[in-house]
Image 1 (cartoon, rainbow, N blue to C red):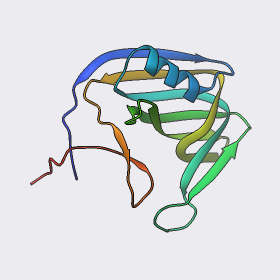
Image 2: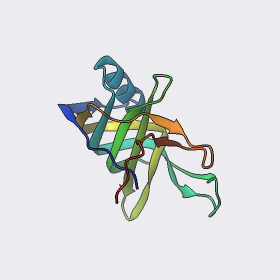
Image 3: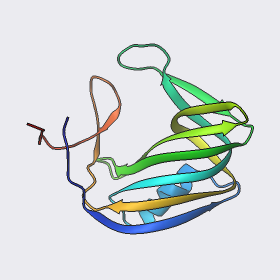
Image 4: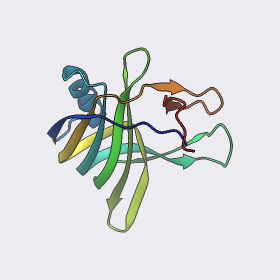
Amino acid sequence: MKYLELQEGRSFLLRFEHKENLLTELRAFFKQNNLQGALFWIMGAFKKGTLVGGPAENSFPPVPLYMSFEDTREILGWGNISLLKDGSSKIHLHMSAGRRQETFTGCLRKEGEVYLTCEVYLKEIMNFPYRKKDSSSGIELLDIPEKKNS
């Protein structure tokens, strides 16, 4: 385990509107407000979305197992936004999307179209680490310094 003590900054409350693409709008807000990193909580509903619900098989590096829905679902999730070394932003959002007795849980990847509204509480983190591609897994991991628990 590696760790980093975080320094909190501003807090924001965002309301996303019907038919907006959550990922596109969240990235735009992140850039417009010159954020380096943030933690956020989300609740609302999506008309459609695509999640990764784990690896297709227990292999390394993992092959994503994609799950999509287009039947309007209530959502609840938690995530973070960080910068990559090239200056672009990376959203890492784990969420559950439910309708009746069926619930998908996973990482939102390709799309998330808002149905009616989604509310996001976002907390700026001043010293959020960059993400860097890990050569063995192929995923972008937080680049936390070599400070380890003893």
